[in-house]
Amino acid sequence: MYKLQGRIDSSNANTIEQAVMEARPTEIDASELEYISSAGLRVLLKLTKEVGEVTVVNVSSEVYDIFEMTGFTNILNVRKAIREVSVDGCELIGQGGNGSVYRLDEDTIVKVYTPKIPYEQVEKEREFAKTAFINGIPSVIA
Image (cartoon, rainbow, N blue to C red; front, side, top):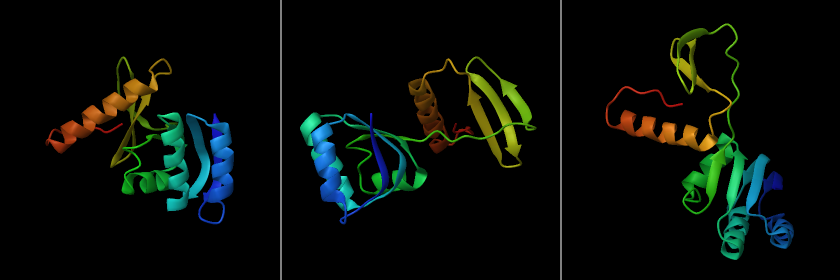
């Protein structure tokens, strides 16, 4: 897996492009990527044209917003970093086959999936919950 770090903008996009095109990764770890400008997005677009589908994982919320606003979530397979939350001392609301639900505070609950649940299943459950919520059905978006 190829790792992107820091900021990618017009000042370093050419250097990063050379390195990325030489490595030709299909999966990129963005856990340490702080910012990406249009110049950096062009690097990823060029890579996609060269290697086909590119997956970018561990994307922070801030960087994900950039991908989403520019439409790159439709071009690349972009996955947000999984948020880590402590449920120590939180009220257990319910349990099921996929995990447990806890109340963090008056307005926030969190679902903790069992380790055996694949990430793809979590994503499907999130999409189902979003659709239900949009259609007026009270839902928890994991």
